Image (cartoon, rainbow, N blue to C red; front, top):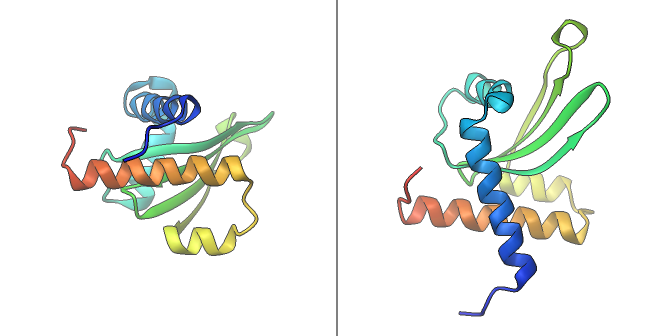
Length: 125
């Protein structure tokens, strides 16, 4: 097994911290509740691998259970917009996002590896 670089360790730390925040922080409960409502059955094996705060909404890409990729846009003011929700299998996501930047592809790959490891080893949620 190869030794992880410092940047890989940092990225893994960020992904794990993001997972913990998603599951516990009140500010992210709207994201979590939308994921649960739209997907109906999910575990706590969730990784936010991309998030972009914009002026009128927050954009997230979340890996769910290592099998599903969700793009969700949550308006900052619920009065002025609806939640946009799109989902794909991992394979579909990679096919439609062939032009991902190296960093985005690496971050997604790390999230996928963490999700698979968590599922395979029944790691605590």
